[in-house]
Structure formats: C-alpha cells, structure tokens
Image (cartoon, rainbow, N blue to C red; front, side, top):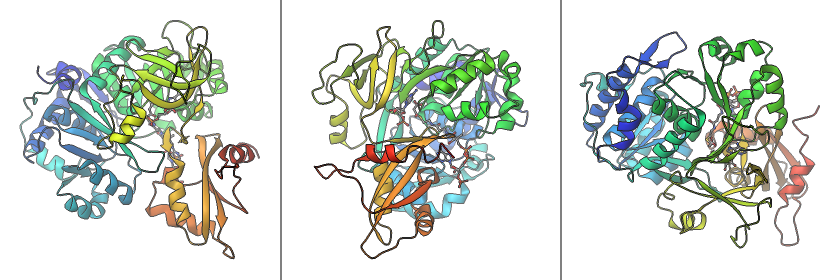
Length: 505
Ligand code: MLC
Ligand code: AMP
C-alpha cells in the first residue's frame, strides 16, 4: 500500500540529481537535495508527537522549505492546510480553531499574534521564514535526511483548503490523496508535461492553482520549476528564456501584455501558456496570440474539484471557453431549481463528478449535503453551457462571489465588517470590472439617519479584520440600496450602475 501521494509525486525522484527548483538567484535545488530537506522536516514533525490525520496549518511565504513542508506532511500522513499569506490574525484564528490544527507554522513576524490562538487550541507553534530560517528548520537541520513514509491509502485525507462561504464563514474542503494524484496524472497527460519541462512558477503555493496544478504536475512529470516568490515582471522576463511553460491567472497575461519588453521573440521557444482561476477575456487571448503567436490554453477548476475541464493541447483552443471535461470527469449542466439535466446548449448550473471531487467540508455536514449530491455530483455554483462541439463556456456565477486577480472574495464576509462600522446602516459589496485584477471589490454604504460615516476611516478600520485583497478599492455612499419587491438587494442593478467605475476615465 505504501503512501501513494508521497511515493508517486516525491519518492519517484529519490536519489536523482536532476533539477527541481531553479531559484531567482541562479541556484538550483536537485530532486535529491529537496527530498533530503523534506525528510529532515518529516523527522522534525515526527518529534512533535503528531498523529497521521492531524492538521498542520501553514501560513508562510513561498520558499523551497515551504514546499518541502508540503512533502513532509505527505510523508508523515499529516494534513497540509496552507493559508493565504495576506490573512490577518483574526482570519487565521478562525482557520486554526475550525480545523483543530495540531501544529501551526507561520512567519516569525506573525508568531506573537498567533501564540495565544495556538495556545487556546493546544496547538504547537513553529516558525518558518521566507529565507528558510525559523524554529522548524533549526530543528529539521539536525535531523537525518531519510524518513520512511507513513503508510497511507489513496482514500486518506491529504489536504484541507479553506474556501469562503456565501454566509461569510469559510469552509474547509477535504481533499484525499486520490483527489490530488488523479488530477495531477491526468493533467500531465493532457498538457504533455515531461521531465524536460521547466515551468515558470510565480503563483502563490497556498491555493489549488500554484500547489496542486502547477507543483503537482511538475512533480508527477519529473520536470523542474523556476520558482519565483511572486509575480515580478523583471524576473519573469529575465527568466522566461529558460522556461518551457507557464501557468498563471489572467492578471499574469494582462501584465505581460502591458510590458513592451514582453516580445514575441521572448515567448517564441515556449511550449505552453496556461490560464485559469478566473475568466480570461477573449480580448486578452487574442492580443496574446497577436503578440506571441501562442494560443493560451484555458482550463477551469476550483478548490473543491481541482481541475475539471481543459482546452485541448492538440486541437482548437477556443477563446472564451474552458474546453472539454477532463478524462474521468463527468460534467453536466442542470436546472438550478430542479437539478434536472438541461439539453446541450442551454445555460444552467455546472455539476461535476469524478476522482477529482473532494470529500466534503470539514465538520459541516449541512453545507456538504447542500453542494455535494449523494450520487457524487458537486454543484459548482458556476453557471455555464456546453456548445455543440462540446466546449464548456462559463457564463456567470450562481454564487455571490468576486474573483480579484484570482483570489476569491465572498461579499457577505466584507458586508458583515462594513455593517459594523460607525454610522453605517447597511452595505452592499459587489464586484466590478477592473483592468488589472479582472474584477475588484466595490463597497456601497447607506448611512444611519443623521450620521456621516467617513470612508477613509472605515477602510483603515478594516485592516485588522480582513486581508488586504478583500478590501473594497472604493466606498461609495448611497441614499438607499435598490431592492426588489421581496426586499432583496438588487446587486445586478448596482453592478450595472458602477460597471465602468474602474475601466474608463
Ligand atoms: C495583491 N493585492 C490584491 C491582489 N493581490 N488585491 C486584490 N486582488 C488581488 N489578487 C493587493 C496587494 O496586497 C497590494 O496592496 C495591492 O493589492 C497591489 O498589489 P500588487 O503588487 O499589484 O499585487 P501583486 O503582489 O502583484 O499580486 C497580484 C497578483 C496576485 C494577481 C499577481 O494576487 C496573484 O498572484 N494572484 C494569483 C492568485 C491565485 O493563485 N489564485 C488561484 C486560486 S485557485 P497595497 O496595500 O499595496 O495596495 C483557484 C482554482 C483554479 O482559483 O481554478 O485555479
Ligand atoms: P476557488 O474557490 O478559489 O477554487 O475558485 C474557483 C472558482 O474560480 C470557480 O468556481 C470559478 O468561478 C472560477 N474559475 C476558475 N477557473 C476559471 C476559468 N477558466 N474561467 C472562469 N472562471 C474560472
């Protein structure tokens, strides 16, 4: 039985002096050196007396050591729970408590704030900094670089990723080893990744895209990555000549196109550009092809399902579509009210089923039951249709969700914070088009009678509560919110009214 996740992604590279991580300073870490480091961390984790299945909540900057911690969790059977580096201590407290994390690993800068949270949870607290220092690595460095992986099966949980909820409470999506492995192996085939690939990796590694799509695909294929801490155009342009492939959210592509140094010549040798996590505008797709000759391959997925569809590697990559369901993934478009499958071509709710689909939300049986049908189909909340050639089009969202630069923001969570601000009677938070982030957050406020809330002061107030990427880019006062006859706020009216706020003038 072994430990399929560890064996098939990491163990297959044991002893190989092949490159795995190319760092921006020119250093290269081999597979063998990376696995040695992972084994040392696994030995350190082993000394913390954790049990397989325990959650390890990790909020650290992107670094080789952070990735080695992921490998070490796989090796020790611990559940890896990565968290956005932008989350505030208030947000982190929820994830740590809700998951019942037994170990919290954070940057030293966050240690003081998190100490009481970890203590309340009886969780151990260790640090890991961007440069690979910290208490965890101090301990790991004294350990043997070998560790016998803990036995696990494909049905065992490997990771929790928290996804925000429509009610404002985040939900921990439980992913098994099989969920991750099956998807990685499918994508290697579909996108023709091999050991000769060098992926330009500038995504964060706390989300599905950067971790389970990009990293797992590279691991499963035996290729290497140019591992950049974040999207930095200077680094990207400097290092692209050494890459064969790139994955990014649409903002990566609009930023590249916005830079004159990004020429067709620079991209000529590249094999593949992939986009996902948010809609890629047809206009971006066409401009990219005009500049480079490459047609970006767009795919669709989510935290709960990993990847579900992809445009073809060979064959037409159709702009404005997310391609076909992946092998082993069933996709249907249903009537959102009845759940009945609709005829091909009609717009409805996208539902998916397959080995990629998660097991449910941690300790939230009602929410799981509401979204994951007994027959295994997951109700994605995305509205779409399948055209006559089988290409899936995402046409909107049935869920009240904003996607800004590939990060998801649930308006309810922001509204709850705005409603609490002095002088505010009520608020509505919507997503409006934005040239850089695709969509951005706009807050509309109604004042209590006789009050004059100060938008600047409110924006300053939300700093400690909400991660920066969730902050409204602007707050606008309204006399009242538009409502329908049922009293429900008509967000479509607001979205229409403010749609040009950031894109013109
Ligand atoms: C950073 N900021 C953002 C932001 N990213 N604000 C809104 N939306 C975002 N996405 C904040 C910064 O804190 C900063 O605050 C200000 O906005 C401007 O920062 P920046 O320097 O322009 O941002 P940058 O660091 O360049 O980051 C932008 C980005 C990054 C788009 C490169 O957000 C990114 O890498 N996004 C990828 C997200 C991702 O991996 N999503 C996949 C989810 S998985 P200040 O204080 O300076 O104003 C998924 C499933 C699937 O969806 O299908 O893949
Ligand atoms: P997350 O919860 O962060 O995993 O975000 C998943 C959501 O991102 C999906 O439910 C979609 O709404 C959106 N998404 C991902 N890929 C695409 C895409 N290619 N086009 C449009 N939306 C996408």
